Length: 188
Image (cartoon, rainbow, N blue to C red; front, side, top):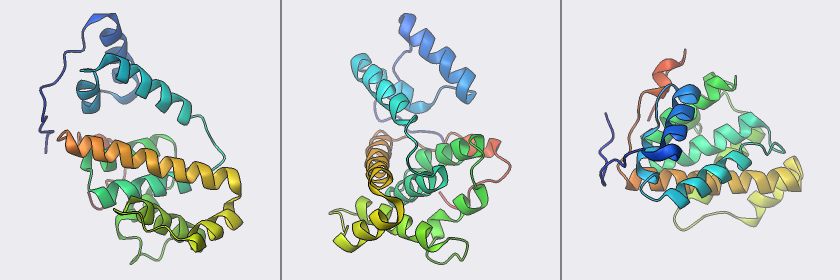
């Protein structure tokens, strides 16, 4: 289902628009729909892309755990664009797609380790409104992951909440990124 832009697509014009378009096409094969939304506010676009670029470089948390947490948050919010793009990114990063495919049904799945289940439960608890995080959850993750990785996990879930809620509010839907992967997602 194509995106139902709730505000008209911005024209990716000017030098910044051309650079952004060229980068997106080279990196993702096409321009992500969120670029057309963000570009209505160029200073915000620059700030968001700069922040995302910096966040992409942090690596205290295992990449698979990070991916599971982000996808659990996107699934709980129901952002089909984020689920689609998340599968695509995990595929490109060589992450465990078979497990990632099971994230929306992780409670019924038997493929996740105890730590992975703790991460998924935490992601859902953080995404709930209001948040349902307990001290025991944080203590457990801190004991298993350490301070730096626990803080990174928390920040990544928060960031995905922002992404998913923004994309959903703006009417963005799956663009078919996961169709380019060998293993299509189970649920969106």
